[in-house]
Image (cartoon, protein in one colour):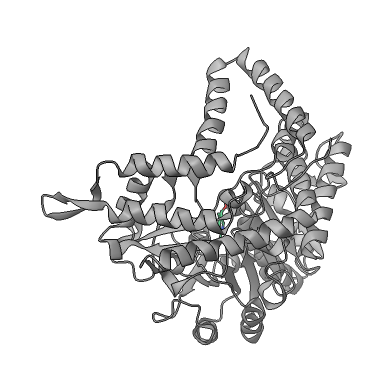
Length: 488
Ligand SMILES: *Cc1c(COP(=O)(O)O)cnc(C)c1O
């Protein structure tokens, strides 16, 4: 059986073997809780039938998915490779070492930590590792102590106060930053004094001179680069220069675009790994692996990152680490580079499709995997546009745009991403058609009236549009099947 990680043309044998595996698994599940087997079948059917444009989602290969359903789930393995708080971890050691090795080789990182359960957890590990390296270790050295347990109550309180009073500079939420980059609802905003940098109001692009000015004034311990909704590439060499000038540690959160880094679409100054002190990511977005996280680090930060569990993480999910190893092995194949390039090419095709139909895009286009459409030009809020699109079978999510007139709940943007549908085999022509269908829905959606003016949530979609768009997308989806050859 030979695997093809592109999923667009899997070997016949691979598809047949995967089908057998799923049929058997579902029969076993059915014998205990048939409703779970039914929901599992329905989830595949729904994913097969919808135009999934959520920028943070993808479709992992059967090999990645099947790897998660094993007895590694039953094992406790707190600690690090070869140094566990539990006995009999030799096979977990093999798994974690392989996941870390694939990650180091793929990204060219000196050190990789495969345990984080998610992107948020990866950032928590990174933040505490930076605090441990930059604040705690020098604090202990100054007091002549080896270990926090050697400190008097008074010295410990003084050190704790320092740990809790550091500054972090990250990208603002409304220009595409992430909640974990120091915002108040997230624990990162409670751990750090936070300031944000934004984008240029004219161009929508990151203004590096403004980032440098903010860094000089605020003097952060940590400069965070990376985003969830910025449709452009970032110059990480410049970010590192800014960090170095003010003595900050550069943390790059590549959760969204790790697949483009892995696939060598982002190289040189656009590849974060050689420039950042610490790089974090999810493994399930453009990287197309299982749900989880990774931390990459320089030798300087590696020892502290390695203490992620049990510092902030619960026991490792060894079955997911095994699936990370499989996904990273896939991402090291030449086919993944073609995939990553297609993700970026397709985003351009989608953006061009919107622009030629008169729509307004934040920054005027894209050069990564996502497109941010300003729906105010259709007279809609993000909430209305998202709901109307969903009525027509187009799955997207609403998102703030810079200086959003509708706030963070209703928003004024719709974020589109190409990783998932590119996995299905969509190309530029299909994405142009997607743009046409989206514009058809939005042009035919009207805000409904509320008692005090137009509603921000309610809308009406003209008769027949949902059916028309459903039918058109069903045709493209059928021509680009999800998991071709996989039958339950
Ligand atoms: C998605 C995302 C995260 C969070 O990942 P989870 O796995 O959902 O915890 C963190 N940072 C960025 C930039 C993201 O886009």
